[in-house]
Structure formats: C-alpha cells, structure tokens
Length: 360
Image (cartoon, rainbow, N blue to C red):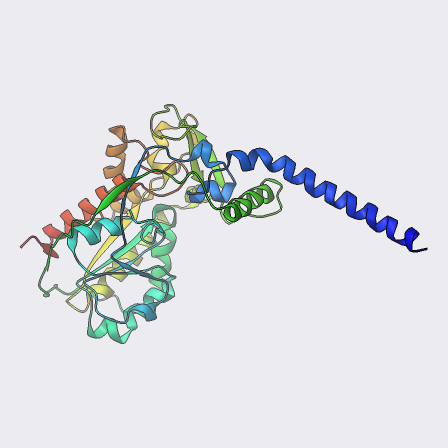
C-alpha cells in the first residue's frame, strides 16, 4: 500500500525535476555569455548587452557631489542651485550633467526628482521661502516636455505675475576639478544578480512580464555612431511615438506653463529660472534612420519658436554630425559623458551672460 501511494509522487517529482533541469539547460548559453545590464533600454526589452552595450570607455567622476531626493521635504537646508528634473538629472552613474555642473561651478546643488505636486510643495516650503536658491533649473526629457509644462500650468495655481528683476549677487564659479576616471562597461556580475537578470529576461521574452516602456529598434544608414556590436541599430523608447499626437494647442499650453513657472520662481527677486530639455534619441538621430517612420517631431524646436530656451537639440545634433561615438548610449536613452558635459558648458555660458554666474 505505501509503495502504491509513493510511486506517483516519485514519478511526479522526477518529471518536475527533469523539466527544471531542461529549463536551466536551455538557459546555459545565456549564462555562459551573459553580461550584466547597464542600460535601461536593454533591461526593459531583455536585449543582450553583448549586442547593444557600449564598448568605448566612458568618463565618470569618482564620487557624486550633489544631492538627489524624490520629495520636497528633503529641502532642509539652503542650496545655491535647485534642479527639478527627471532621470537625466538623477542618473545612478556619476557622469550626469549635474555632476559636471557641480564640478564646474563648485555650487551646492539640490535635485528634486519627483512629480509636479512635489515641485509645488517645494516652492511653498518654509525653507525655500526663507532661503531661496540663487538658481532654479527645470529639466525634462523631450518626450515629456509638452505634458509636463502643460500640467504645471494647472498645478501651480499662483497668479501669473511678471518676473521681478533679480537683485541677488551672482554665484562665483569655483571649479572643484574633482578626479575622473575612464571605465569600461561591466562585463561580469555576482552569480545571484546574473540569475535574476537572466530569469527576468526569459520572463520578458515569454511575455510573462510586462515592461513599463517598450523599446523599438531602428536601422541606421551608418554604423559608426555607436561602439556596440550592433552599431547600426538604434534602440529608442516606444513612448517617443506619442509625440506624433501633439499639435499647436499643446505647444501653446506648454509655453503658458513655462511662463507661469518662470514668473512664480522669479517672483521673489532672488532666484533665477532656467529651462533645460534633453532631446530624445528618436529625434536627434532621425536624419540617420533608414526608415523615417521611426523619427519623431522635434518639440524643443517647436517650443523655441515661441519662447527663448537653450537649444540643446542644435548643440547635440552638431556634436553628432562631428561623428562623436556613443553621444547617446547605445543601450540606454540618456546622453553619455560627452553629451552631458556639452550641455553643462552651454548652461554655464547662458548663466554667465545673464549675470547668474561670474568667474570672479
């Protein structure tokens, strides 16, 4: 009797074990050639870093000198500069544009990476009112530009009074000249991390895990713009295509939102406001795409036709035309160290011209 009961369970256990063994055997090639995820786009789409990861060394600072928080209550002491931004400002790696701004200026920088309501709470906080920063920069990626600025007009319910003249003294540039190093992309990871990433990739490929943002692959007409193995393929976020649905009214609302923010920030007469937008890969690489159906409209240009803003699109497009490799990382949606440094240099030049910064 016991034997007849246990045999089915033994057979069941045998087949379950066999299936598990076959599953891991099928994954063996992945484990053997796996490289840890670095870029957000390879991670989201479960694409191998060995195909799309960057192979040219990138510059990094040895440590981060500015503060990143995701809630307004973190503004608990005075700062020279406040940046309200997205992932371009809050990169986990130490070569963001704010790493370069911090090093070139020597200023104390507070980065709020949150929602519009957090920005509103920051502006209304007692610390911000009593110790306002000398400069507030609102940064956004191009794909979210019109939506974020339009939404701000609604969230910031303060009256749209004209900005007051800034009477605060300029910030003196005191470069830190912090140590920097050239690093290779990580090629190995702890076994547990590798197992988790491989399992996650398998789930994505089998449709068992839904990604927050999809990734599209666009063929380029040249293969020297990326250092990845598949250098003629551009990874871009699928949500970039939403820009095709916006029109003139959306741009007008964004302009109103931008003007409202500027007026509100500068109403204290002590804080200069600046707007910075980073172009999407789908617009900055558009002229190199074999199929222009992947290209998306340039919303930075559309906004600049109505209000003066920093033309980061022209700046980075010119650098791309010079043949700079990995200006945007092939496995990610963000600019590399070169692109971030260029944007920072352009920001500083504007702030020197309007008297926010001074060299002495």
